[in-house]
Amino acid sequence: MFGETLRNIEKKGPVVHNITNYVTVNDCANIVIAAKASPIMSDDAGEVEEITAICGALNINIGTLNANTVPSMFAAGKKSNELGHPVVLDPVGAGASKLRTETAKGLIEKVKFSVIRGNMSEIKVLATGIGAARGVDVSKDDVVDADGLGAAVRFAADFSKKTGAVIAITGATDIVASGEKAYIIKNGHPMMANITGSGCMLSAMTAAYIAANPDNILEAAAAAVCAMGICGERAVKRMTERDGNSSYRNYLIDEVYNLTPEILDSESKFEIMYFDK
Image (cartoon, rainbow, N blue to C red; front, top):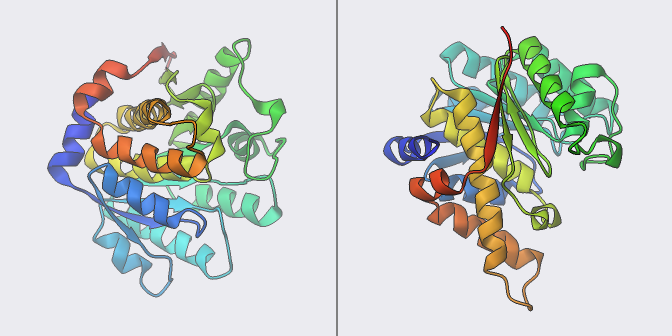
């Protein structure tokens, strides 16, 4: 089902503009390459409109905001909208500071996003103004368990209706939802939480998937989430007793590089939920 989205990346080789954080910028570039797309990392206001104009999608990540990059995010986002390019928002740490929260909310007001991807704490802050943010990690109070899964899926769908964006809430169980349909994804491994940037890499990779599949944003975003989870599972199987989180990060990128449409189709684990219009 999702294999065709990966085939389209391989056929089109989209260029992805990333305004991302300096903690994970190299990993984000490498994961886009591994996914068979091409990254451009540019955050200077003097060039972001030109750069994003030659790309197929834009990924905005607020993980290391500063006074120079915030105007760049708005400028690039508006330019991408003018050109009809899909745009991803990763609201890293929304709720942890006034600057992060107001910047993310302002971006949602001024820029039309195709996908908003974050953990439950970040998405709750943006949707309701209330959340139990714990730095850039999800709060224990916001972890989605089996009892709360149905409500979490409907929450994501409602926020999608409000914003017009596909909402991807990632965690132990991932939710990728539009206002009418949601994927509940069970791929992934706890080891993914032990490296810095697995979420940032996923957002960059999601931009590559939607750049190559602009008419099928929901399925492309769900495919990216499944792909990352599958690769996280496969990377763990390569580890020896002497390997740690640094080796795991490299194995994860390797698995994305070696992922095939056939593996993506056969190893994706998800359920679909539909909503009334």
